[in-house]
Length: 80
Image 1 (cartoon, rainbow, N blue to C red):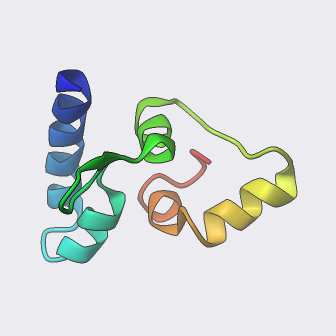
Image 2 (cartoon, rainbow, N blue to C red):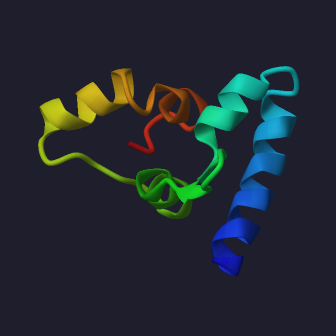
Image 3 (cartoon, helix red, strand yellow):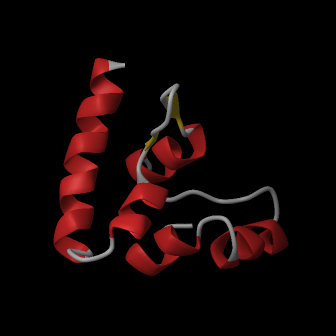
């Protein structure tokens, strides 16, 4: 968990430089889901730590890029 928190810290710092006035986007892109019980967003962790990621099929990847991981596709086009 310490490593995940450290990775998230550095990732959030990069996001703050890219989106200085968009706290909502940064919150959506955080590896850690804040709340009463903090949770690790495993798919987000995979996206942040991997060189590239893909869905099960091209249509699946396209759907992910347009919906669930739209912020990530805008931040690092072509990573998904």
